[in-house]
Length: 73
Image (cartoon, rainbow, N blue to C red; front, side, top):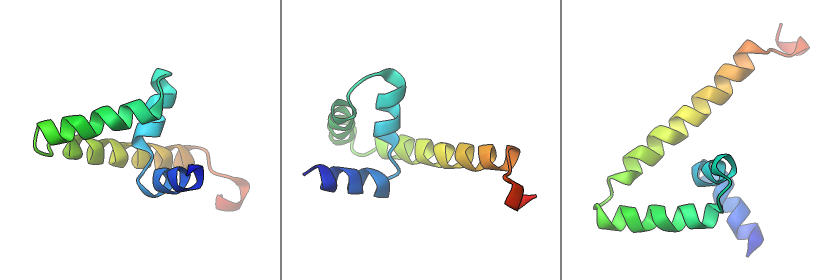
């Protein structure tokens, strides 16, 4: 079961896992509340999720750009 969870986290941006790390809160609870909120509001949190995933990806690329390795110079 853990292998499946880690596979899904890597394939689906890991937004909930990252939020759990930052907030010191279990990622499974964040996922559960996200699913509840998605059903209660007819899918609008999905837009927030995609914005957060995009922001995390851009931030990671920005950090790589600001600190290039010797091979990228």
